[in-house]
Length: 82
Image (cartoon, rainbow, N blue to C red; front, side, top):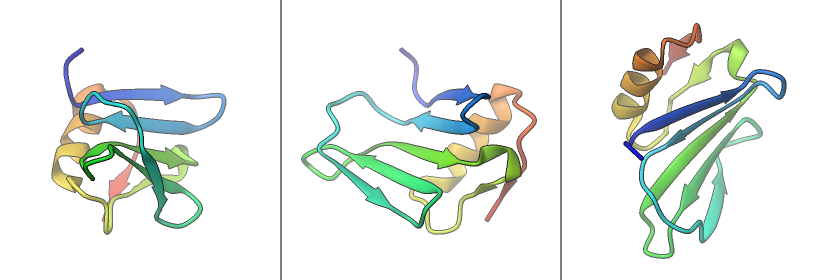
């Protein structure tokens, strides 16, 4: 699999951007709508955005530039802001 990888569940309105392969050790919350998956060594594996159709808030999200580029490259009609 090529990283970053973007997947969007339109029915659930959830976007997930996977940045690396690995087992999720912990999920950190950045409020109700953004979660960060981390490996046991603290590496960021991916970021989940709930309510994605309302826009993707990248403020305080690690690797925000990489995530914004991946979403743009995906062709999904989602607004990204920081």
